[in-house]
Length: 430
Ligand SMILES: *Cc1c(COP(=O)(O)O)cnc(C)c1O
Image (cartoon, rainbow, N blue to C red; front, side, top):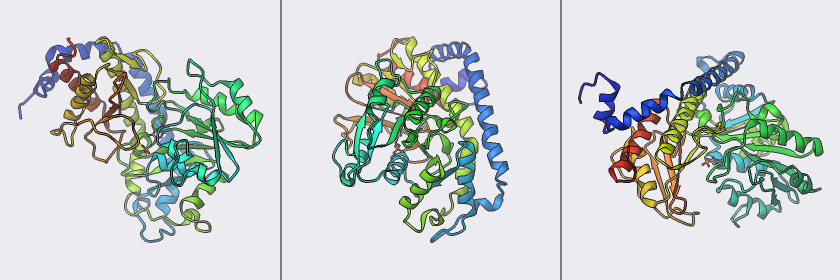
């Protein structure tokens, strides 16, 4: 290992050309004001989390886990109170037994919908994995099999809510309206909390009986407020994304009204048992500590996404959101226009990882996708996408969806490494 006394040397030692590093520094010098605003958001959210932990008198005994049935697990139960306070909701369910984001959303839906009810998505096509949950693509155990029908209202061309169409679509059977904050694998803009707040109000004014659920994946702590601050009945997400702060080894959350969350608890375990059971084993400390770090980790990931957009736009690639756009989540899409570009980008992200940096990601035919997909992830937690990761389907426009980074320094290095990789393959010049 070489001794490096300057950052330039340290990056060069790790394979970054000084000319590229200089370009990165120049770009970062223009992002100072924007990064300062992100730091302010981070501080506000840090204090929000801290206040919730203090209010609930979190102490060392909360980090003890439970086994078996998991009765009287104060660590687990008070963590749920902390989440409810952070999201300003009556209640929250935060469990290891919620296996991922898709499961959390599936739980929120199946727990609150009954046969003959209709679910209405008012933000267009939902995230890919929800297609089988709902039964848009026929699937064993889908809501459709239980007699729950589904309709969706497309967003307008510019990616806003289509209020006229929503008003028309709200029917006598509509029981739940769903909103997805982040664009997922689409190239529409992600929705802001302000836009979501307006849509929640619109639906509730017309139909106070309709439950509004927000898929908040990748959105937590990006803004100073959350959809739950504006009357969403359920705000749902994954702990291996933003709110887990990179430390949560698994889990999902649902923050919302007492009525909705209680339905989720009995559906997750069993009628009659509800939230009283569900051993936390040894993960309480990681969930608390991860939530505590989440505002900082999210801020770093956000800066990484902005840096990536500014760097790759400079190289002539289309970035969504673009270099200047306001952010609503931590996802950055970059269109490479060729398989070689997408693959080289993912190779660079992988080569920058703390884990599995020596392996090369290969495109593969992933179940449920109609073309090959390439994924780069060198993560401490399997599949964690608050850690630096990238993936994309091998078809036009050959977009990489890039997110995360537990520290900004790592995100920055990964982005430079990816650019270096494209340079070495003759796909860009600096
Ligand atoms: C990641 C994600 C999900 C699903 O979460 P998993 O943990 O991958 O199951 C759902 N919706 C959106 C918008 C997401 O980004």
